[in-house]
Amino acid sequence: MAVIGIFASDKGPGDPERASLMSQTGTLFARRGAQLLCLWENGVGPLPLMTAAKTAGGAVSVLADADVALPPTLSDVSVRVVEEREARHALFAEETQVLVALPGSLASTSALFGSWASRQGRAKPVVMLNRHRAFEVVKGFAGDVLSHSVAGYDRYVQFADSVEDLWNKVSWVLEQKR
Image (cartoon, rainbow, N blue to C red):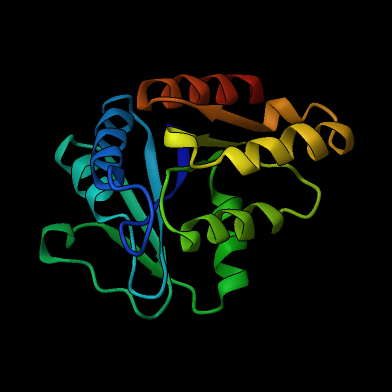
């Protein structure tokens, strides 16, 4: 079972559909047998995603800072606290096969790049749901900068337009790693 690291947030300004996107993603990924590892920082985590995945019978765990407080409906979710941010992000990247970013706040995007950068030259694949052009700047950066400096960058950085496409890209990336 693949462990997929999910970056999503339902707090702060951002895509108004993100709670719905999180629910759709959690349900689809759980039904496909993925194990989800979620990040919980500064009292914020992807509750709709976690709730939908658990409801669909999926496996969900959390890596968190000391401010974690899950609602009673998620009391059976495994939570590990790693207080130092850099160590938490490094462990998150180490334990996952692929990183997935959903449209959300700047905090979730910052956490994604913190985890991705923690790999220090050992690329971890990342797939971003570019709904409503949420990651268009990153897509431009990948085409303009990564394409010239990271060999085979397109195997490591993928962009999806829908939740179904997101699963297809994640599956493709996982298959490439075998």
